Image (cartoon, rainbow, N blue to C red):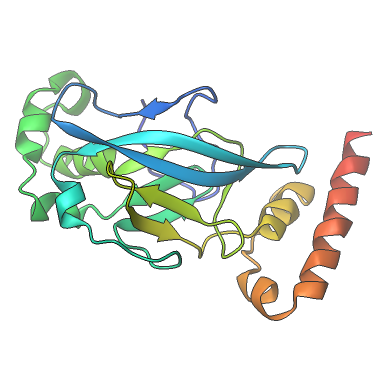
Length: 202
């Protein structure tokens, strides 16, 4: 898989049918974490998705349970997917040198590749056209035992994704405050943009 550095609203590179995600399969012991999230397709339709991400073994013991709205071990959500905090790798004694040394075709010998390896271990493109994350549509990350140990609600609302799609990226806003403080206005804007996207398809 290609590196995931770049524009926060770039398209995901994950295969739409992917069910288990691991950017470096076979290089280190892993745990299966279940991620439940929402996406918006090119027509403006909402979809709830679920995928397993394989994280380094030991994170489940390190990450503490959290209520929805608290990040826990989730660093961020972007249109392309999600990331956990790279600093967690140090906390579990993860051996980045081993990863780089055992994937020379990917990393070569440059010392800067340790950063790239850390991002490969912690950043995941998720299946879907436009990943969103808000109070209404949170991303939730569950440890192997089913305990919620990560969530994210501060990326893009459904309205934010619709506005981006309807304007071909000229409106790039989360509309998080509008969703929290002016629900009637928010819902009216959602309906307006749903109709606008429908007319674009005709």
